[in-house]
Length: 94
Image (cartoon, rainbow, N blue to C red; front, top):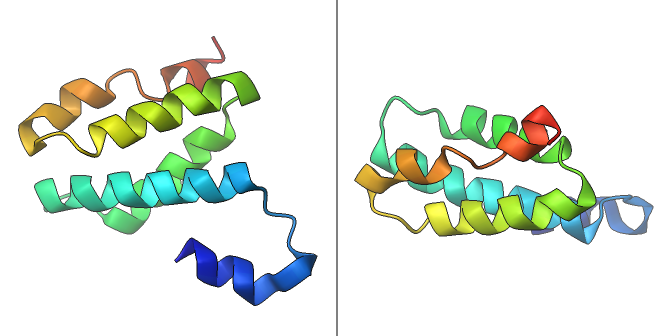
């Protein structure tokens, strides 16, 4: 999905590799979460995830993306506990 956006806008894009990776991480994570909980809207989850990652400073984003990747691989019953701290640094600016 992210590749389509990059290809469509060509060289005029100002999308960084970091932005693309954030979108991929959020899409993967939210797909898994929505598969675990039918009340989760995958599109809303993805938008909120990207918005939170946009609040991250450069030194925070790698850690949060790694945590999203890790949580996206957890069993459904383990996701909530895993994601408790994901993005807190970025959201609170600490």
